[in-house]
Amino acid sequence: MQFGLFTVSDITQDPTTGKTPSENERIKATVAIAKHAEEVGLDVFALGEHHNPPFWSSSPTTTLAAIAAQTSTLHLSTATTLITTNDPVKIAEDFAMLQHLADGRVDLTLGRGNTGPVYPWFGKDIRQGIELALENYALLRRLWREDFVDWSGQFRTPLQGFQSTPRPLDDVPPFVWHGSIRSPEIAEQAAFYGDGFFANHIFWPASHTQKMVAFYRQRFEHHGHGRADQAIVGLGGQIFIGKTSQEAKAAFRPYFDNAPVYGHGPSLEEFTSQTPLTVGSPQEIIDKTLGFRDYVGDYQRQLFLMDHAGLPLKTVLEQLDLLGSEVLPTLRREFDARRAPGVPEAPTHASLLAAKNAAAAAAPDAVAAAPGSAFGLGAAKGA
Amino acid sequence: MTVRKLAVISAGLSQPSSTRMLADHLAAATESRLREQGFEVEVTTVELRDVAGDIMNNMLTGFPSPKLESVIEAVTGADGLIAVTPIFTTSYSGLFKSFFDVIDNQSLTDMPVVIGATAGTPRHSLALDYAVRPMFTYLHAVVAPTGVFAATGDWGESADSVKTLPNRIQRAAGELAALVKDSDRSSQVRDPFGFDSVMSGVGGFQPS
Image (cartoon, rainbow over all chains, first blue to last red; front, side, top):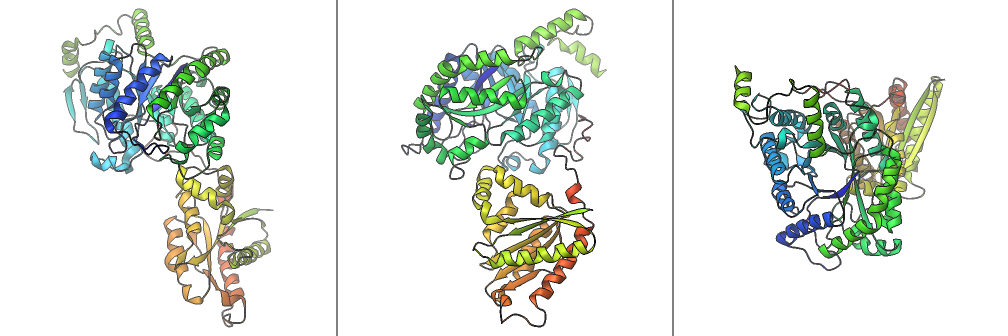
């Protein structure tokens, strides 16, 4: 099972000091947080995409490439990549590029965004959000899997014999998760392709996530990708760790009370009882996180939001230390002990490459075309 | 015996409240009309004041507390709705509007509704028709032609003695009962995973 961080890249005033970091400070802090995530034993760092302040992460693959250059085992992902307003051609190219630079430590989570005006800024209509996600992803898959693509659709200029470049590393496209808070269409899309489903989880009650994941698992099996309990599920989570429960609550409360998403609304106690947010001792974090499995089943990826709402870099790094030393070893051990037989790990470049090579060995003729040597193949296809 | 579920919303703030009183009168009159026609009636009455904080928290967080969720389910799963608000500053109260702002805007489609309002003077009576009725029209509810407005004087000696408040309540209740009689909303199964035409049904997504 993979554990990691996801971040929305907000630049928020620290309510305890009144200090707001500069863009440069927050951007550099994010790289420092990602590096430290690897140091404390986490597996994944996922970065959001936004095109409006107070967020800074408009170009996630640039940031992830910088992180890739300074890490060696950390898997780089997104939370999320906007499949609605980005050109799928550019997504195909950016992430193939990142795969090469990061030696395959790359996957991505597709989403539709949470800021309405992003659609008109990029010439799209929010009322067609689902249609955009479906059509754009269908094209993205082909760009990664076919060397030359002839394509026409509703939302983008047609392509004739187009080859996106570079080709995916080892001809293995990055694994794709589909992220959603409330749209069952996205769970269906993930299930249809046998891709991963990432439930944001953190801003909504558990009962809602439970229904969405159950639906995705059922549809994954229906579409013939394996048993429902073998579907690839990721969850968000949100934690703040203290030596004691009281210490954690006292330290986090001012950040919670003023947080952009839920501040000035329900109390910390109400929100923690109704959502996955956990503010407490290491044991409380462990108990609540292990409890997620009770309502979504064995799952493959757990990402935590830990650096938002104005928390200063120093605090976030200390939180990562506590996570790595006091929480993570037990979570790994306990999740491993409870996992049912036959439940797969989250796909990685290495596992996907091994699967591809095994398939090639089993049926040598079917995959004879070598990656990249596509002029002959493409010309034959086009003829 | 066939059951019909009535939901009653009162946005009154005081105890006792004339808004709640009007809501109760409308509910009792509708219930007796339906019973006369052989229906069993289950009435759920909601004082929005009891979930006022939950409504505002839902506005801020995007999801309802368990307490508010059960209220929303009772209202949206009813066969008919009686909705009564005090008139504040020439319109429905903010609490009343906020409740309808946080529920799913598809969830009252085809809902039979009787609207009622209370205020200090009869001069606010048109608020029912320029504010409350259009809101339910937007939500695709079926609003009974008669809305019942009760000014403070309607409860005492300055009441309209020709078209009395009880007359108006009876007329509205009759209209609502006729709509509720044919409503099967409470027995409908709602599939939260049903797709519209963009997906080819639950049978599968077809990429282009």
